[in-house]
Image (cartoon, rainbow over all chains, first blue to last red; front, side, top):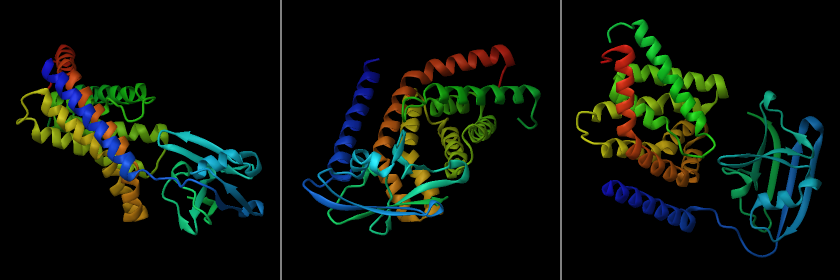
Length: 132
Length: 172
């Protein structure tokens, strides 16, 4: 049994080391200080094409969206892997019609969710209703 | 197992149901699961063909529950790979440490398997960022798999074999 306990402790220590490497070198880092950013919302089927300018001290997109939740009509859904934006301008994407909100940062497809998208001064974050 | 006997069909149904139930029971804890351990125990206890069929039934049941998506393709791939690796290593592994190592490595590679599938659909850059984003969860998955297999492989396989012989006679 002692051998098993040693093996389990070794695995837990290895996991702590992985966590340290991840949080130090891999996880996205936010920028401190004031930033001017643009939120662009496009929902073609509802004739919505609106732009919002914000000055914020938040470091990640999700925090800004939460603060402006009412103004942006934003809604979210939490999963094991993070949070997804399910609605903007009070329009909720209809999964049965394969709808989702596509996020682009300065015209480039975002590869992570809003919790991991760092806010940078001058950046434009576009939310567009699309079908998968 | 040259031809499928009613006994085998019943056994495969029971085993796949136990895996679906096992997954459901632990689904509230992210990246902690008992599916890997069950597939290893079933492969060692009931052989390659039965376990491969169990994996097909299990993944198909997952589709019926959660719907079809790109991850399903990964699921049809990851479990048979685990079964094949376990089967090939079976004669060389002398203790539960070996099976715990297989379970741990399988958990650590889980994100990488799916990253390959995602890459086919969305490109290698997306696949790489998908893998990198989930690397911490893969670490948790690998560690929890290792600990679960280390503690439960021996007692579980003893019970499984005992019950199988009780109801089905000799299974292999």
